[in-house]
Amino acid sequence: MNPVVCASGVDLLMEFLEGMLPAEVNAALEEHVAGCARCAAFVASYQSTPRILRDATAAALPDEVEASLKAFLRTLTTAFRHD
Amino acid sequence: MNTIVPAAYPTDETLAARAAAGDDSAFEAIVHRHQARVFRLACRLTSDTDAPDVLQETFLQVYRHLPSFRGDSQFATWLYRIATNAALMHRRATARRPSEPLDVYLPQFDADGQHRATPAELQVASRADELLDRQILADRARAVLARLPDLYREAFVLRDLEEMSTANVAEALGIEPAAVRQRVHRARLMLRGYLSDLLGVKP
Image 1: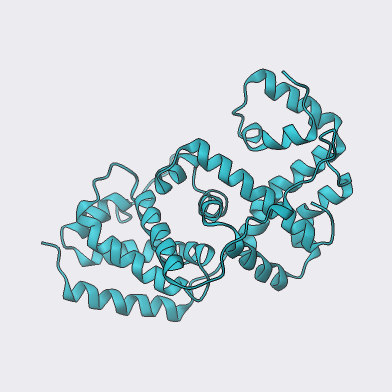
Image 2 (image 1 turned 60 degrees about the vertical axis):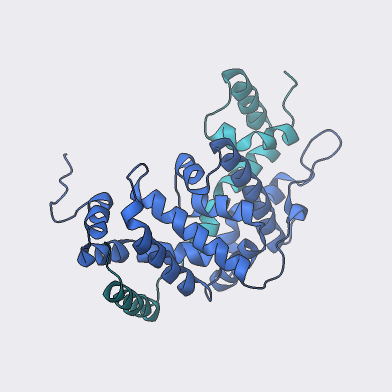
């Protein structure tokens, strides 16, 4: 196989982190990341991205939306019955 | 230590069967159990403004289709497939600016395939939540999610923000697991670069 460079490593990153790569490819990528400060930094920020976006977009259900849903569904269940 | 599940806490599937048989209190229990998560999902797939409509539409569809829920998949997976579809229908029905590929935020490499950015620049996105004002980050995060093309947003939101398994996301979206991974990966790359850009560094 071709030696891993940063660009080819990034292409394989998700499968690498999920342990899905063949052992030989996995070992080559591990070796590259261990010796590449750029890739080590990139992997850290790639792994942090979901958590940062998750925390930043965690909307709570407002009371008025819950009340409105409840009223809507009460009308619905009153009007329809499953046969 | 063994975990004891109280009999008073029926599974989703049990509640779904009771609701399908006409037990409205079981339906209310399903709604109560899932409404906050469906609302959060709807916010992430559409917007805070549109999410209440998507929430209502989701539970309307769940109520209508409960009799056809066969239990082939987990109830939660079935529910989030309905919620995702309701959100996408809502997006298509409302006029909005087209999404953008956000390719400008993908990592950049030199001719040898090495990252152009320095290690310090590449690292900084992982500290976006420490370095940016919380409200500004929340506003920008919602805005950038809205700019992602639908294909990437759906997969990223379900897999990384709602933390569903790749297999369940594949089932909810009706695509192969490999396609889920490819889309989530692409979304992560663009969003990582976007966070870098917010902090004034190269992706």
